[in-house]
Amino acid sequence: MKFGLIISISKALLLARWKQTLVAAIGVTFSITMFITLLSFMTGLNIMLDGLILNRTPHVHIYKEVLPSKKQPIDYESNEHNFISSVKPKNDLLDLRNSSAIMKSLRDDPRVLGVSPKVSVQVFYNVGAVDLNGVLNGIDVAEENRLFTFSEYVVEGNYQDLKYVPNSIILGKSAAEKILANIGDNIQITTSKGERVQLKVAGYFQSGLQDIDKVQSYVSLATAQKLLGESNSYITDIQVKLKDMNQAPAIAKEYEHIYEVESVDIQTANAQFETGTAIRTLISYAVGITLLIVAGFGIYNILNMMIYEKMDTIAILKATGFSGKDVKRVFITIALTIGVFGGLFGLFFGFLISSGIDQIPFKTEALPTIKTYPINYDPRYYLIGGIFSIITTYFAGYFPSRKASKVDPVVIIRGK
Image (cartoon, rainbow, N blue to C red; front, side):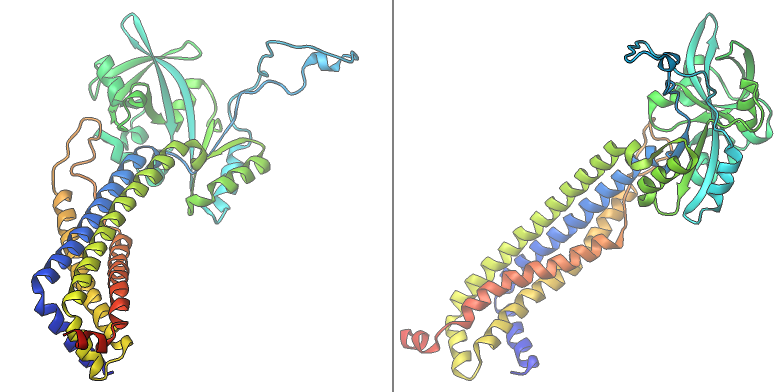
């Protein structure tokens, strides 16, 4: 049977019950619209929340752990059994040996996007007679900004002042509020070695996690080394950003073996965030697909009713030479027409609503860099929504069409 004739018959049946057809198409449109809107908003929210941690976390973190000596002095005795309690860590520095050679080797690795050294300094912020616990991170300003978008988290002041202004500090926002420090003020800190040093406040840093912002602040690498009284080769941590984050677990183990250091990958360090993201995305997909399946049942019911009402039409078609396959094609064409047009309008309205949400102001003290509600315009969601609308409507039309193809025209005409 010619395809053009199948299309014309399908069109006639669609227009004969245009109200029901419109209801079915609206159901598909609504389902696709909600599917796109829900996924775009939820994944945008996931990216924003995970970004608070993951954007500031190296893919591989190389450091030196304080561990007890593997062989204690008593182990050198000839006694067969030794019982030891309260084993103390070995007397060793926290810096990474041969850090310059390690970083050079890492930069030569084709899998590595960049390397940023860091020096962690335990300090106390001196506030009158009170000392508040804090951590200063000595960073390579340029590399920190390139790899971890450091400038986006500096809410006031210029992050480059760390590099060009001697003895400057960018305070965590919450820490600055506790010690009442304004930009341009000099604050006093006490290092772990008991030395008191004055630093000039160059700006405020806000990660969006208040507990971190209460203690964490940033200085240049040279300032951190000077605070500890160490040379410019003193490095406590090496932060590695990879071209492919998924390779981090294997590469972390490889580096640990090669350089004889401790290393942790981003997946291990932030497993709880990945779990939360996966669950939220799964819920979004489940809700969206449920909406599409419900719309599919609506189309199924409408086509079922159409078949019962058009039994005589189906009988006449078969009596005039239409085969069962031709009848099946007619009703599948009707279902796919509803799915395609409903899906296209759903994709359009989904994009429209997502764009509208993207313009709604979203202001919170915890997330100063976020100005509007987060939306993810990933084309994959539109592709999935479009394909799923066609698949759902195809099966919604297939089962009624199979029933219609088995109609015996003799029985129907005799009954009439």
